[in-house]
Length: 212
Image (cartoon, rainbow, N blue to C red):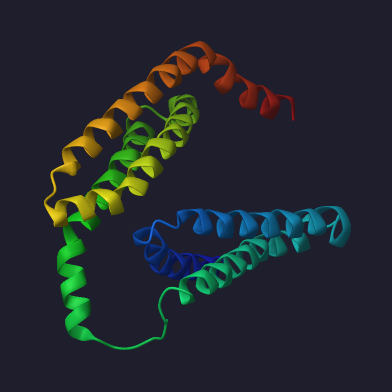
């Protein structure tokens, strides 16, 4: 069931690129929000009304909730994209080869980035044990969440940056400079706030689990 949600998310990400190139990511964000609201609403229905006393039966429905949200997200994104360009499945091997060739460096970079953020936990598990991994994992999870905002910020700049490079108007330097300035300004309060709230953020969930 969960694989269906992954498949629908991949399809949605594919057609969302059309909105990205047309600088209409507000519509894509709206579709994501509506899908998440549907997911949470169905989860609440399952937890409080459908199976309030049967966790085993309700668990499958919680996974189905993710599928429902992904379907609604895809349908809404598809509706917006069809206003820009028609969408229909077709086989074009030459186009596939060209896309794979051009996107391969970016894919390798994403793969290495994923390994970078995952291999450390495996190394700690086998070299230091589960206890130290349990101390390390919450901090890394918080770090991963904090990197999402800069990542999305740079992804949103890609269409403008690519257009500037293609037009050779020289504005890409200004875009990169402004992006760096914004990220630097963003990182200062995140670093200060992270240093101040580091222990409370890590200890609160662990204290709650210990009480349970």
